[in-house]
Image 1 (cartoon, rainbow, N blue to C red):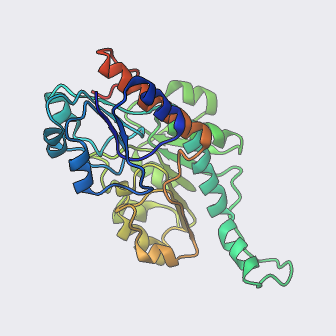
Image 2 (image 1 turned 120 degrees about the vertical axis):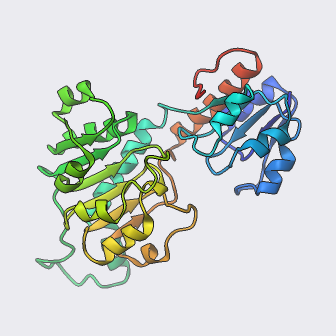
Length: 318
């Protein structure tokens, strides 16, 4: 059974697949594959190990052929895959949930800290030789203790981010389809509507999946509801925020800063964001710890092997 992996992952998963089949084909280029390369290499495959950057649609499934049994995404999100089409064709779709919860929540907090205390800007200030001594108003930032954090999307990662806020004695608001009773009992978090969350939060942290209803969920109107002193953090998906509207809000001083690990047209970044001192920009590294990425690689391999054995994988999407 031929398995195609669109990009090389950590050895743990590759070793499992090599022990399972002699027909493992791995893209060895350290880059995203092109559309043409994807279509050429999926021909005759029984399984595809895909990255979030790979668009797996009807054309890809047709090109692969009727023997395609499973598409295993190396990510918790799967908006790059046409799940409905895969389901029609009897193709299993899997992802890698849970394992990256703590790594992503940690990164959200790293962004909160560096943006609120102007860490990156201060570092550059020193490197540029501008530091000539302590000054009363030098690099004034926001103290987090006692402030309010708004968690937009209270799934596993959102809840983990909220629990970390408890250590800073922060007030916690969250916006979610359902009440999260355990979170409320543990952290005294309060469920509110989107507009209330935006109006009352000093930090707004996004932890939503990308879907039709979340595309541009934060646009000009929504960003205008935020405090001028507030900071926006996005470790969810870039298109949840209208990037141009965010640029406009930052330029106009309608919000104080932003920390972004994801972008609307990733890997393209709005050129104005690159110039702003009140933004911290990261190259989508939410799950980028050795421990997490290694476990993700194992999960991808185990999902594929289970599906090809005719078993139900541990992490089915459909």
